[in-house]
Structures are given as C-alpha cells and as structure tokens.
Image (tube, rainbow, N blue to C red; front, side):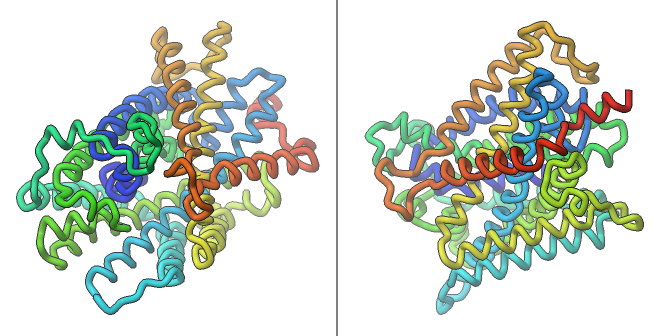
Length: 462
C-alpha cells in the first residue's frame, strides 16, 4: 500500500493524462488498467503462494519455464527486475525532490529553481531512506503501520477540501471530454499514449514478494497482501482521480503547470498555506514510498546476487551477521540513485528516459513469468501446490494478464507527441535495448559459466 500509493501517484503523473486523453481519457484508461492489473496481480498472487521467495519473477521463471530455457530466461528477467527496482528507487527520490522544490517555489516568489537543487534534495531523500533501512530496519513494521495511517488520513485530508472548496466541472464534461493535446490526430490514439497515467499508479504489487523470506507463512500472507492492495489502492486511486478531474478549474492553466495538483490545491483553497498543507501529505508519502522501495530493491539485488547473476555477486550477497541485513545491496541502491539523479543536472530528459526503463523492465518480467505459467497450463504440465489456487480460472486469467501487459508494454515506449524533438523523445526504447544487450553480453562472457538458476540449486539439494 505504501509503495504503490495509487491515490498519490495519480496526482504525481496527472500531466501525462492531461496532455494525452484529457479527463475522460484519464478516468476510463485508469479503470481499464485497474482491471488489467487485477488479472496480472491475481496471477502473481498464485505464483507467490507456489514459490514465496525473495527472487520473485526470475525465480518463478526458473520454476515454470521449459527446462532447456529456464536458465537463460530467468537470467535476463533477473537483470530486468534488478534494473526496474533500482531505477524505481532513483525515480521516487527524484519525484520527491521535485515536489519539495515545487513547494518552495509556490511559497517563495523570489526563488529561482535550478536542476541541481532538486538533485541535492533527491540525494538527501535517498540517503535518509538508506539510513532508515540500515539503522532502523527493525522498526520498519511499526513505522510502516504509522505511515499507513498517514496514508489514509492524507487521502481524506486532500479529498475533503477538494469536495468542499474547489470549483466543480460538470460531470458530463469530466467523463466524456477526451483531449488530443499531443497532436496525434486521433482521440483514441492519444488516450492510449496516455496509458502511463494508469500504469504508474498501479505498478509494483510484487514489492511484498521480494520481502517474502522475512515473512511468516508467506505462502498465505503474500497472496492476501497482493490482492487486497490491488483492490484498496486501485479504488482509492480511481476516487482521487475522479475528484481531481472534477476540480480542475481552468483546464489550460492546470495542464500547462509542471505540478498540476499544486495548481488545483491552490485554486481550491485560495491559499498558499492550504495548498502547502495538502501537498505535504503527498510529499511525505512519496518519501515513505522511497523508503519501502529501498527495502524492496536491495532484497531483489541481494537475491539475484545470491544466485550468481550479478557482477561482484559475492559482495552484493553479503549479509551483515549482527544486523542480518544485506548492507552492501542497500548501500548500492544509494549509489545508483546518486549517479542517476546527477544526470538531471545536465538533462532531465535523459533521467526521465532512464527511470522510465523501470516501467518497461518490470512489465516484461510480469509478462514472462505469467507466460511461463500459462505455457504449463496449456501443455498440461504440473504446477506447484498453492494456498491461492486459481484452478480452471487460471488459464483465462493468465491469458488476459498477458494480453494487457503486452499492450501496456508497447505503448509505454511511445513519446508524448507524434513528431518529438530530442527533448520530448521517449528514449526509453533505446535505454531498454542497451540494457538487454548489456546483460546478454555479460551472460555470454561470464554469467553463463556461473549462473544456473535458483531451481537448479533446489534440485541439487534433492
């Protein structure tokens, strides 16, 4: 719940949907994505119950892929998962830095925002998250329970002022007005290009899986966590999105703002102090999400290194004997965040392309792991026992999940406009391709001699 933060995320990425799709496109595309991720997350819940391991998707692929392909496929998807969570940590830290910077700009008219200001704040956020995950790790469950309370109170604290104070747009206009702000020449195409407005807030239900080896009765707990998070996060995000779209006021002003939700908050309250108080909830939860992201990404890196999939695997797989924590993997998340956010000083576009890599990387890992289970069902291969079996419903659910993921994967590569200049180009496809080629080169040169896939270790123990 704290990592996904769907209601907060729809506010953070609202500019994407406002440009491509408009209010109607945002609302209905979110609903489609919520349904699509319902199929995806239920499929993952079943796999998590079958094999509750920190490795997550790459371990499931090793379990369920054809034996002759399990080593290669699990290796490539292991790289994708590590990359996705590492750049996701950098992305959430940078978003928090940008939001804090926007809040300063709102309250101080003489402030001139500079790229390096946001970068330094992002590094500070990441540093705090890493410090917390090392020094206060044992307090993580208690702190996250408190953060969940803030998560709920923040939702109420933003919704009520918007409902009571904000100007209202007629419901017919909100639910039926599509916008082609990108200039695609088609409302349908523009709405599909804006699909990231629905994907980003609903991504990451597998986060709990990567903590599974630190849970009690993970085979039962993980499916419940994934399913209930999908329901509650999805619902809160949709309600917040409808409220936001109903309270825009001047559409053109909000759509052109770098932080649309701040404009809406100020328009509703007619007060910088009121807008600041509402935005504080968003910023606090963004920082909380980064804390959780560090915990998840470090465990993903640790698990893949434990299976000899990374360079310097022994170093990354080290667990501090006193703290019982993967200290080196946690520290590496800070290093990656610092290096990636420094790129924003020279080119925010380049950083956005790198961080958007996380979306496509994690989508491809979902698609491949669910595809392996789908193959087993189609060919009549046995599956592992599960405390969350899908039974006969498994085949159509897996099929719908793969179809949705493929469409989302393709459209996540599209730029926001049909003829982009270099500063508007979505370089994600180039970064994704280079990452895959780089992992393959490392596999050919080194990893194929050492990496065998986690299932092979289990077979040796048998």
